Image (cartoon, rainbow, N blue to C red; front, side, top):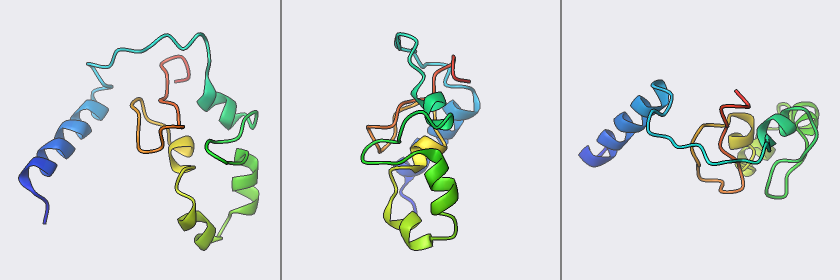
Length: 96
């Protein structure tokens, strides 16, 4: 059972996501687009990660490996806000 405050936070976060983060102030990224670079197979995910092509080719159906390594999730599915993996970069409007 979820606590009332957790339920309200989840609703608030979902609303922000659905409305494209209306209160989000985008910091100057100096033109850096790390999420795009990751998807282009130019950089490894952080921390201690690998290239997206390695994930797609070598991790397929290796559920133990996928379960042991959670830091890739925010690189595969980036959001406009910071998440648990502080090495993952929020998705920028320019990348979208």
